[in-house]
Image (tube, rainbow, N blue to C red):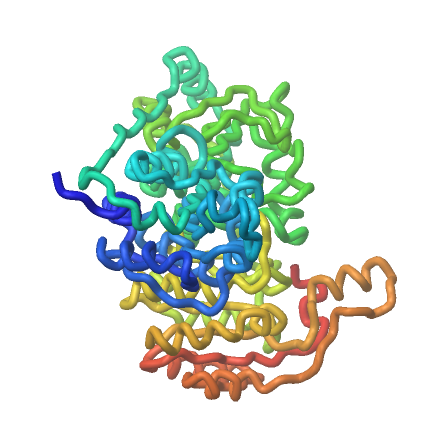
Length: 535
């Protein structure tokens, strides 16, 4: 039997899992790994910081569904990726984190850049391995299954440390693929109970989340909601499971106190609450113990048993969302249930845009962008507003860091998504502070020749933190910064730039950007404290 390198065995298994892109920064310790990825058919994309590389990998994952791959060299390279790996853990992103490391024998007498990568990544990953020659293919297969949730539970990151000599070690040219786990199913007794609840419900409501996105449960959710008149609320990352122009769609929830004033009372009044893949890691404290399973019927369908304590359920089921909803719905006739169209209208009214401001920026962009546009959002006040206003027609079309809430994610998420979906419009939304964190990655957009659009909300402040500072009657400190020419920064990296301060200027700039052959930065200048009363 012929031999290949251990790095080749790893790379070929990742290719078999659907991976076609890896993102990172190389070092001498990962050169064999990069070579093996390219040889296996996985493009290695040079980025300018490992944290941004991880978000680019996530952006591509949301388009093609394959595990994200982050490559980082020994020591400081690996440490630069800690934030995005923690984000992948909290945002349930299947990510394979490949780090180079000094050989164990060498590390006994050599200390430069030597640290225990596995000890660092263990608390923020689902598993961590050190690649060995004879088990390289098995370890790769385990890593993919654990990262994607195929071995049970939710998706998340898995770390593989690759010693220099092991990457080059000869191994048998054979692939190892363990069988997929059969999905769990709802038991007959639980199914009968839940079907009885549905048959008698007068005020049903559904809350869908990340697990439903992972199950591709959008069609099943739509069929179920339409068949029984059930209104749907989603977490921010689950927006688009039901086209948000649908009359049963009540939009996203989790961050906006303004939206909560309309949505929380519905869950307190409902007689049947269906939690369809709802992972409360996206939510804030206002969504803790909202309903009472002692007096309300609460069905929790999820990928993992409830150990978080954010809520309780009358009946908890660890099973796929789509097949479970189909089994519940089959043969249950529709009855008259509550009509929440007034609530839907009230929500739209609460977030109606003014003549100019952050809400007008979102409204104009949503009107100009075509169906199927992928939007990304950074952390900050604009994300809360955008997540309420931006209507998603498909799942995975509003990408953000909604669990860890990492700043600086929107720009690299947009680059990764556009690389994986070159024919779709991709628009990244970010505050000026978030943009400044990752402006160097415009070089990645330029090198890849990606005509992605970046919309920057320019108010020269950390708006959400400044608002909280004022609410606590503290003096202004550490939240404001100077004025910068963001359009000029874009041109300096070889892209296009525009500065706008009204609706028509924004519309013109965005229409031009969507047909450009390079990236565009649109700096939308808004008043300071423009988010007051809006979120």
